[in-house]
Length: 398
Image 1 (cartoon, one colour):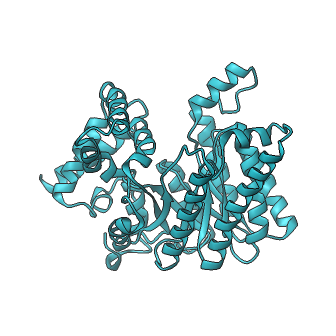
Image 2: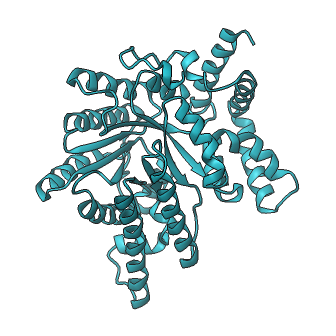
Image 3: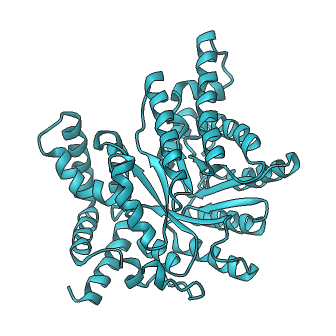
């Protein structure tokens, strides 16, 4: 539903497929339905993902072209910032903000890390000139070696070279956050694996304290499938209040569940994750309640594809009488996914965004393959998406 027909007092209905897919033409709706029907076949997705990765790595003719026309088009804004402009403007027509993310990952050299830093700074400059891009997202492992972060967390003695390397990491993150602060943009710093997360939390804390004095520039990310994150969220907020700065919290359920559980078994330490999905849902929703309750001193991004968690925030905001476009209350879903949540929130006047990655196909292929694998019917995501797409096709009579 375009902005001029937005109804800021209307009830939110996540089953409304007319709002959910009004941004898609009939041809785009058919293409999207076909793609999710393919991703609804686990027996096809795993070998297909491996084949796609092999084809790109070996520069097979037509491989990049096929990927660009299918999963890249669905889940990525474009190859560059300028190439993403069309996607960003299209979202804006439907009252939907953009969170920009340079999609390259798994880099290892100082040259690569500096390139990623500069690309983040370019993204911040780009965002500062666009009213609909309030946030740029980044990952510390795009700016630092995983092994270095792990050594710091394990309190291992660093060599002189490693100390210099770690100082460079801090300088890169500070350069990004300084630029965001000066340009009126905010920064999401992603959560990662538990064995480097304490290091990331420490780095983010330094940046929050430095830059969140007058507004929330820097957000930490809390993976609520971890059994310790609700307590960490609350204690971090209390500490920020006592030290006199604003707090930024992006809530996610989490991205490394299988890896975390396997490593805990291999290394013989307690599993850091919740025993089941219900426990994670409960902790996630408690975190949403906590953040809305403390909205005056805390900015929240509810980055969930879970309709119940999104509706919970809607109801809590209504109960407290908060305006639907409150600057501290943001919702976000990945580009190309959960449009029923995003565009129904947008149509009702809530502040909602799409997380829009960009980058060359060879750089974003790991991200794309995770999207394809996450959306198989094993998780139920593709099944839910497909059901809604088929309903909209039926409604349109196509």
